[in-house]
Length: 357
Ligand SMILES: [Zn+2]
Image (cartoon, rainbow, N blue to C red; front, side, top):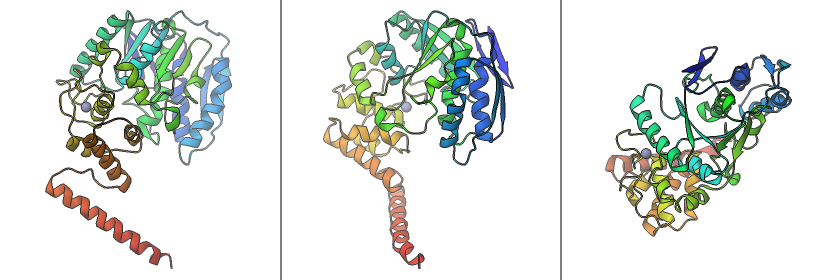
């Protein structure tokens, strides 16, 4: 097992790892911006050095109240040539399967990280995830590279948390694996129409590139566009993994990610997908609690061809989010709470104009 360490952060894998400190620069830069402290980044490749100030400015704009801190670094005298090979971060979800299909003739390695979606301590869930990733790699004739890291759980205090930090973490892993590839794909999370401040972004990801490793944010297709491709590959649908809520049931079939994916598949005519339990009902849809990120995917579902009852469930879940209400539960106590929230909301709307005088 090979291992890189820097200031308490470690990355390990059984494949060769980088022999330069470039891998940890994204982590140090984002931490410095979040802390509002000047950073000495050490030896930096000329290409990455030319983008550091832009990266700092993007993060400074995204992180509320942060400053454009001074950056100190020296140009690395050794510019590594890129290794052969192209890799793709692979979780087994809709985004990474879509990018795998899209670049199946170019991608050689699938990179699965233990410590990002699945906590390091949860070895049971990761064993299942790794087994499925190996099956997917075998199906497409790719090599699976498994990485372990404490990057997620040792992340600095960044406004927006892991959502804002994970792009730098992905870049760090991409550079740590430099001997294995000259190009790394990161599957997009959001479509071009839904872009917002988010740690992996088409504006940001390519700026982390060095002469040795090009980092590519792959595509901005909508989630429905991606699912429309995946439904043409039943062997992929059977291996789809979108949630880690329950290691015994693969996809739990109850959480927001599972429900939104099942809805997307149903809208495309897939009534039953072997990767999910048969749990999709209008009531389950109405009960989903959305947030400012997930609601973007749900609004996309409104334009799809769902059966009327499920479509109404999607409308109800979005309405609850927009109104700041708890999702509809169908249970009396929760319904009373919904109406209490609505009443307080209406009263505050009546009172607030008077308060202005
Ligand atoms: Zn789930």
